[in-house]
Length: 150
Image 1 (cartoon, helix red, strand yellow):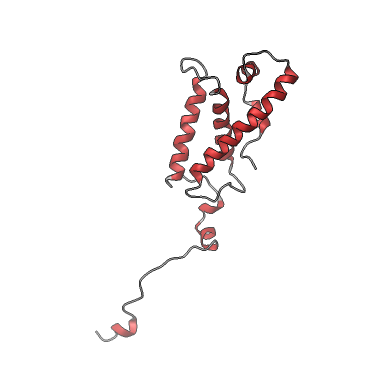
Image 2 (cartoon, one colour):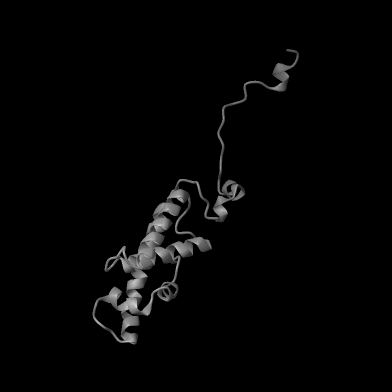
């Protein structure tokens, strides 16, 4: 299961950018949509793999019920992957895709370090205990009976 869908990512791409992503050749609308589909699917798969790489430090991946934030991160990375196919001009409006990608990576780094929670049920200590959480400690040295009268 992907963290975002082809339709969600496609809606974020401007129509005039599609020919650039596919190649500089002009295509009619139907042909263009048929060509862009597999490219978007590949960009989503790459994005989800990148997300899972960061989350694997703290969570079981792929997430069975990903929170909404993961959907957004997947779309942002997929869009970056699509636009970076032909290069991102940092002097143009395309710079926003690079900025968003860098923000996503910073966020995922914080999640991997345990500084930010993504809000899944595995963040809940009770569910961690149900999943087999254990604590080890040294045996007790003194008890009330041993200390009685001292």
